[in-house]
Length: 344
Ligand SMILES: Cc1cc2nc3c(=O)[nH]c(=O)nc-3n(C[C@H](O)[C@H](O)[C@H](O)COP(=O)(O)OP(=O)(O)OC[C@H]3O[C@@H](n4cnc5c(N)ncnc54)[C@H](O)[C@@H]3O)c2cc1C
Image (cartoon, rainbow, N blue to C red; front, side, top):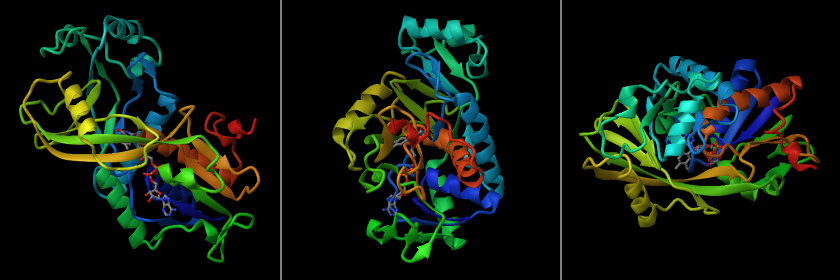
């Protein structure tokens, strides 16, 4: 099997590693402008705090993601993934109640620590409804992951830095510049909205911005979370974010977003800080919040691997394993990821 992958974000590179493991022949092309994988927080969090529910398929995604990033770290003689103690400052009585109700339930107890007196009385002025500690969360160093993967695939001559011109693809025979492939897989992130074969799918471009702040008096031991995350990244630095701006495809950092994130930082700390960096990116989100995976109905040699939304780092390792098994062994995709759901 010979495959062309378009895109070297977390989707394309996870897929490429799955192909390497299976001995599948592939080439990646990527235009070298990444606006999501590179700037992400990289947080792998199994919970959705609003209703205190488990994130979709979290129990399946989490162990596969841990194994993937840990093994990749060993292979590259570095660390990509770090354990992360996320402390949620409850936003309401109701949220605190959800935590108490769910913390000991099967499934939830793997990801929610039983609340202690110390959690209830966590000593900061912003603590009004108590706090809870998430278990099993982590974060991937997004910039390092992206740069290391891109450079390595370039060195292996498995990645070419170029922009795909759709006009060079024959969708029936899956040829690109006269080279014949069994499949051409589009892992284009937010740029997939312009794809001539998959552009009809409900992919959205959702801008988000992230500040890096220097706040040496805040503990680096935990990631405080309410309205925003404060992700400790060492040397007194934290990433802080993020916001959601729908249907926006530009990566220009704005004063409005900065003001909003700074307002949200005040909901977790009063500590002084200095903003040292401010970046923006665009998430490839989907209306029904599920990934976009599978073959084109009319041109089955064209395949999509997109729609990873706000949780690409958590989902990509398992989703790309599933896509590999689907293409190589004919195993079915998860029905909620499969783009066949839009054929009805
Ligand atoms: C501000 C922000 C914060 C985030 N925080 C988190 C987080 O904490 N945790 C988490 O799990 N996720 C987070 N995400 C989401 C995560 O970043 C995405 O889910 C993920 O990066 C999507 O990866 P991707 O490979 O699908 O797309 P991308 O990373 O966008 O990669 C697509 C690649 O395809 C290439 N490409 C596209 N079209 C072409 C073409 N025609 N020719 C050649 N190359 C092409 C692009 O150059 C790009 O490199 C965040 C995202 C943002 C923006």
